[in-house]
Image (cartoon, helix red, strand yellow):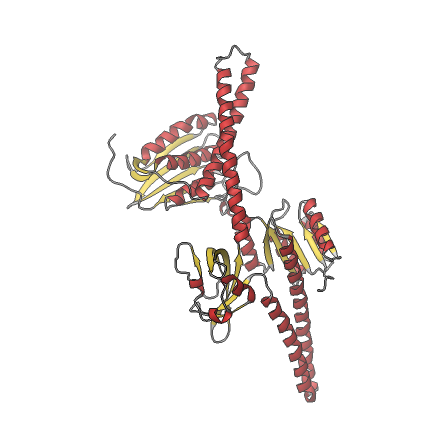
Amino acid sequence: MDKAGKILIVDDENMVTKTLSTLLGLEGFSDITTFNNPYEALDYLENHNTDLIISDFIMPEMNGIDFLRNAKKSQNDTSMILLTGYADKENAIKAINDIGIFKYIEKPWDNNQLIINIKNALIQTKLKKELNKKIIELEEANNKLEKYSKNLENIVDERTQELSEANSKLNAIITNCADGIVIFDNNSKITDLNNAAVELFGQEKKDLVSKNLFELAVNEKYTKTNLIDNKSTFLRNYSIVNYKKDIKIPVEISIAPVLDKKNTFYVAVIRDVTYQKENERLRDDFMATLTHDLRTPLLATISGLDFVLDKSLGEITEKQSGLFNAMKKSSEDMLGLVNALLEVYRYEAGKTYLCKTKFDIIKLAKECMQELLPLAQKIDIKIEMNNSDDEIFINADKNEIRRVLINLIGNAIKHSQKSTKVSINIQKENKDLKVDVIDDGIGLDKKDCDKLFNRFSQGTNQKRSSSTGLGLYLSRQIIEAHNGKIYVESELNKGSKFTFELKDAINDCKVIL
C-alpha cells in the first residue's frame, strides 16, 4: 500500500502527537507534521497541502470541529479524522454530517484499527484527487469533442475505462471496510451488504437479502424505527443476534438516504461497539466501587474532627479550631462529590428505584427555601415563591425532587448578583406539574445552554469554577426517571430560568399526617 501521503496531526498534548508520530513512523509513514496549537496548524495549511488531518476534539484554543471546519476551506479534498471521548460522540456524528469528516475514533483507540482507518482515509483522499483530476480531464475532453468529433468514440472509451477503475477502487473500499455496510429500500428490505455486515449477522449473504433490517437489528425497547427522507439518522442501543456464534452484539447504526431519479434507498453503516460497552461497564463499576469505598474513611474523618472541635478530646486553641474546621469543610465537600458520583452511577446503571409517595410540593419547596436562606442572606438575595395554589399534591419521589429543588435554587443564588432576587413559580397544568426557578444573574450564552445538563459541564466555555459539573446532570437524570423533562432559558446579563415538568404527577387526594 502507498504510504507516501502527507499527514498532519493536531493535539494540544505533546505526548499524544509524539506517540502518534512514532506509531505512524513504525508503520512506514514518513511525511508527518505535528502541531500542539490549532491556530499554528491553520497557518501552516494556508501554504501546504496535506492528504490527511488527524485532530483531537477537546483543545483549549479551539475545539476539533471548528478547527476541521476552518481547515476544510483550504484543504477541501483532504480526509479528516476526529479523535473523541465517548461523551463527545454526538458532536462527532454532527461533524460527520456538517463537515464531512471521514471518521471519528474514540479514545482510547486500538492501534491496529487506527492504522487501518488512516490507510483508508489516505486512499479516500487519493481517490478524491484522482476524481477531481478526471473531472478536469473530462471537461477538457468535452472541449475537444467539438473540434475532434472523429475521435469521440476513442475518447469516451478511454474515459469510461478510467471511471470504471475508479469505481472499482471505491467498491474495494466498501467491500473491505471494517464496519458493516447495508443497503436497503423504503420497506427496510436489504438489497445488498458488504462482507463485514455478513460477518456481523452470522448468515449467508443470499439468506440476508430481502430480509427486514430492523428485524435483524433491534433496539432494547423494540419500538418501530421511523426513517425520514433526505435526513440522516443515528441509532444507539441496538443489537444483533449472531446465531452462528450464539452471541448478542451491541451495535450503533448510522443511516443516510441516497436519492436517485426513481427511488430513495438507504445506506446503513453498522459498527460493533462490544469493546466500547465493556469499557463503559468496567469504568462504571470502578467508579461505583471507588466512590463507595471512599465514603467510610471520609465519614470517619468528619466524625473524628467533630470530636476534636467539640473538645471531647481536650482543649484546643483558636488557631487549631480554625484549621480543624477547614479540614472538616474540605472533607464534607469531598463526601458531597463522592455521593454525587455514586448517585450518577446508580442512575446511569439503572440501579436507582424511585420511591413515589404523595406529598405537597409547595411545602417541600418552602422547606428548601428555608434551608438555603442563610446562603442567600450572605449576599443579600431575596427568595420568593409565586403560586396561585396553597397546596399542590403530587405523586413522586420526595427525596429526589428535593435534591433537584436544592440544586436549582442553590445554583440560582450562587449565580445571582448582589441585592437581587430568586423567584420560584409552581403551577399545575391539568395533571402536569411545572416548576420554574428564575434568577437575575449573569445568564448564559445560547451555545452554553445546549450542553448545560451534560455530565461535568460547568455552564460556560469562558471560565471554570470549583463546581463538579454533576448537579444539573444528576437533576436531569432524576427528572427523566420521573418521565419528565428539564430545560433552561437564558440570555447573557439577563438572568436564567430553569424549568422542570412532570407529566401526570398531580394527585388531588391530600395526605393527612
